[in-house]
Length: 237
Image (cartoon, rainbow, N blue to C red; front, side, top):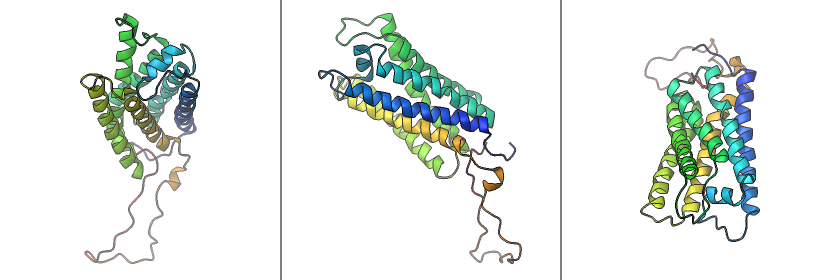
């Protein structure tokens, strides 16, 4: 891969993903504030909020997040970072969110789940499972401190998925709303951490630390002094 900065198109696509995440977060907060008093966010899931106001702020938040997330695999492909598995995982995340916004689900307390209810449940699960794996696949390309952030957020998302699985079945849905919202916030942060290096506007010549002046003599081996290492500021693909 040649040494180059992020092109204007790559930056624009990454900024689109970041903007979509911000708008979706704002809409999600509004959906909670506008919900009826009998919906408890500690126990009621995001889908429960969506079905109570079909086509409202929560559905719109998922749709906006899904559509804007489609820009990220395109930006990574243009940057040369999108291997097939990574692109597929990000597409599953994005399209899973879009499907969750479009496919109707069953109201709380329904005697049995319909086909659309099962469809919405499992596309949502696929979306939230795919993003942590995408973060792991992208680790080598993320520069500097961002790599550590992506690593920890990917691990936290995986742990959150395991907790959600426990709460949904043997845990009898106790505090399921709280666990689900913590997972959603973690994955939103992970998505932002993956997009940020692509949104940086840097000239390729400014991507690395300046070289040591030639007038300085080279140190003798083993004297404990080293030249500064090159520091990547954009995706190293």
